[in-house]
Length: 393
Length: 167
Image (cartoon, rainbow over all chains, first blue to last red; front, side, top):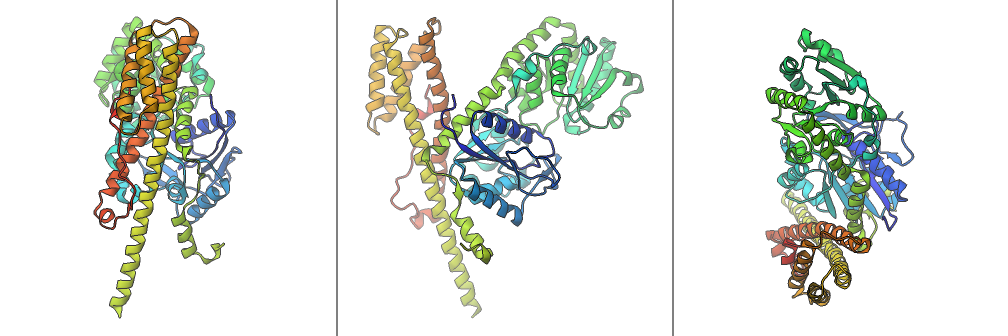
């Protein structure tokens, strides 16, 4: 299995105390690598009062800027740059793993400041990132320093090739498939039920598409129930629902990991109606691992993840009529539902950390082959000497 | 007077820019070397596994001969013949694997899993190498880089034909 033990520095661009896809991915990866015996340090922005795991080093307090249809809490600036440099200098790393190095964040700063084996993972997939990527010519020399690039999906790879003119290896996001494999079906969630999970008050998660589809669905399946799990304020959403259908919805709030497994194995259909901004769809992978029959919008990430409909049903994104049709069809056809759920569950094993982390590790191995360690780059050292006299050795 | 200052700044900037480009180029060349070293190691390993397969029960005598030949050729090939030799080995392995799906003994299937894991790694190594080569070719085709001979005497990195269709 993992042969050589490495000292790995991982940089997380987003605030550690705000949960999100990239942050979760880094946490799971770091914990997996530590469990394998590697020495891992994660540099991430964090609020002052946040409690951090022992392997996380705070780079300072993040600021909030709107990015990619959501508010991103990231960090940059001269103070952060100095922290990044000293983290690199003190860390004596064999390898740096930078996440999302193409946005203005400490990942980009680290890419700038360091020299040596570096791996970059690109998570985002979005068409309208032109503004961020318009600074391509400035980014290019920095991104070029990465010895290997990883994209989490075909969609993320295309974003990268379009904007930065460079190729990447595709390694999907990881899940702990075994955590979701043995959920016990709960009778309260069974029957003609539809599950939805995520921050439902964010428009791009597409709950409104499902709400619009419900009048048609309830005509064919009068006993249909929709369970919405995830953080958010239900009242905001409820007031937009037709009063006659309000009783069909039940908001569960945030659910625990073990409830999640039960939830996925209980509901008849799991719906992911996201309208975009998704580059991998970790929750869909988890739903598959939990043995749910998945219905998802045909945005590139989901289309890819579900094998163009092989491991779950797809509908045209934002088309609630088609969503209703697909759901009704599946409600009526239990055989097809089970078949999709079964093949999806097998497919989801490919995203298990034991597979994904091995792939990431083999990229690490290829990056460290030169034998040199990560150090602060020459340019950045002369710059700091030029800018601040007191840093002279 | 003012022109002098401006000229000095311009010259400093030009010098800085040239060293910056040269350093970028140097880094890319290093990347090409590293990625090639990776690929080379993996290909050597593949040849070794191919030999083992040739000596195991998976291969019938005829394909064993073919495979042994191809593996030795790939291992000993000089750089000019490397591309042909690796393609040959890919072909020989491909032929054998096509009808080796129904294997039963665990020792044999272990060899095959090893081979498929190696092939996955080779695929990644090729992608990394091609990318490094493309980037350096792109930078080296820049007018400034060419006219100031920033690449020095370093040979222009190339990709090999076999990289397009390894297994």
